[in-house]
Image: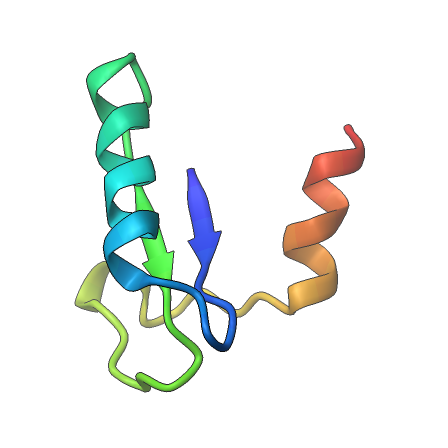
Length: 59
């Protein structure tokens, strides 16, 4: 799952939601915080736009 932290949204609540999904079968949880710029090594070559991410919800 991918969760994008919105301005004013509680990071703790978002992490709790990710942990809930992981407990119930989700294989990977990714929290995107627009204020943070570091990218994990495994994702350094990945180039996604917000539009691409949200388009996955339409499938």
